[in-house]
Image: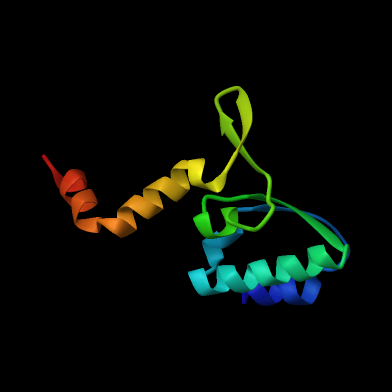
Length: 103
């Protein structure tokens, strides 16, 4: 599986990952974060990750950079569109579907 690739092949280094959540369920995203934490805590690895996942964006002490046109700014996870849309959808999915399916 995708997660076993990380378990078996990540050691020392700097890893640049593009949307690793695409191949991971929410539970596997949490397992992936535990692996990142283990490697990071041991000083063996650093990670640069492009992600739309509010789960991965919530990694403790992460630095989140938002790219908006030509501007790059540091933001909190709560200030990302990905977080707000997911939160609002989960709080009231019927409202989202009514709006989405309106003609």
